[in-house]
Length: 353
Image 1 (cartoon, rainbow, N blue to C red):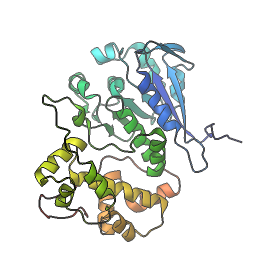
Image 2: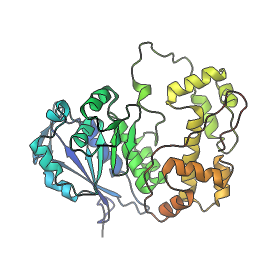
Image 3: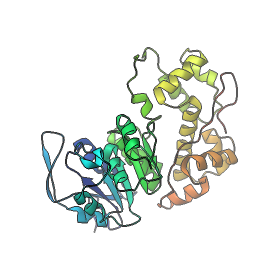
Image 4: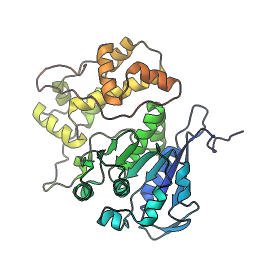
């Protein structure tokens, strides 16, 4: 009998490639996030293993090394391969080419295997040609260099992660958590991903992109915040919400509130509200049998047609297909982005779709 601590044979195998000069924090992200994903019976949904270019000690950027049991042959068994960042990529970073050892290791990866990078791990995927013609990201401080080195890649320096279906990339450090949670959400639904996030004590989804973390010449004032307005609207997602209502919660003008909201979250108030409504809709679709019209009313979309439009735009499948997939314990398609709707500066339309 399979124990709760032992992944069942059906578990999705994630193999993490540990390279010399790796960052221990990023190496641990896949183990922490995927390792906490459980099914309704409490069984692990993923099996996470680590390999190196050769078995044995691997130097990190800290004052210790890690001992890796498996060599690159393990990559041939992976359903997903994760490449965390390294500060010693050598010609991969300097010239955009793989070393013979790294090329031989990547040759073990089977066609169709999902590929994931964290931070500068994207250099490895790009040097191997996996990112040609695709959208990708990396740490904001390396984005311009990454684009010069790999002109065939469509680099987006502003996002926390990208999802091209079978190839996914993340920005620096903690953005690897965002990406791994996104993968869990994509594979097993919002309920499982939210449970992992709670256990890891991180938000299930961070708003905005990397722009909010880039140092600016003039420090932004933190005297006022839009936190209260966000908390207020989360209790009223089923109601019409106007931009003036939100600004009133913070005693700000609409102009000031809109600017401050975007500075703090990286998106407009309208985009943020749509994202929250889609997330609420996903939970209802996974956990209830409510008719689509009622799901639409509960989430503030107003009609089943509007619900379908926004869910399809956000997660790539319609609500009916999403419910069928996750209530049956399967997996849905990739989540390319979120729907967006702009609030007006006066009484304007509510964010109902």
